Length: 326
Image (cartoon, rainbow, N blue to C red; front, side, top):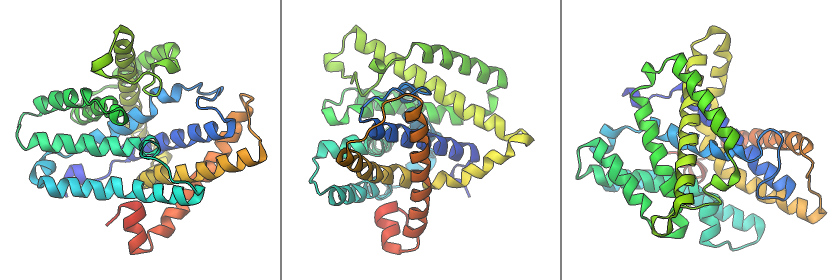
């Protein structure tokens, strides 16, 4: 088996931690009734790193040679099968559960990461058909996505560079020393101190067509903090797994294959949760109490989603439709 086809414990652990952060923050949103809840342990700063970690991890496992060897049709269909089919199926479930016919805007806003990953990988594959130089493909793919004018696809511009950061990291991670990791962590902490929600892609979308000095700075800042934090996190996990006393962390790696299901299913559970909260008109606004409640609810959700995937895997149809597994 090709080395790139084998699972890496530290990448799987990275994805598990990242999906837990996503689930936690979404729970906090529902429990507080606020888009950007006031949390003692995050204060929206998780947004600076969590989706960047996912995309860097996705880029880390890109197999360019395998991508080149696969026909464009087969490659795009395989990614649609793996990414778009589950997100569409779970969106239909959400419409049924909420008794609502949601718009495409809602569909994209919920599952934008999977959609962005699909389009980013498809663009790279198409460019590889005509260009052999990987650096040139990297530059062109970033430029292409940066000039996409459609409002619903603006986050592809945000995610494409992180994909290439992950690809580059794969080729140099063995040469990154512990000293470099410490420096990266310090840099992230400094940027974390200056981070605020206005730098987020959710608040300041970026288009070259209407960019000004502030939007360019926001773009630079969120890319830098996401890259530095994501790379530091992955390298730190890899270093920790080499320490015998931290070998227990490897137990988390087995949940790496569940992250797509955790991501897609969590929105259904959150939709149910928010409707219950609105019905009883009960929300939590006190920092600290909100943190504890979010940790408890998100942990229960993760357990429930784990058993749900185990159940869905037992049937061939549900395994295909809801999990994108062959």
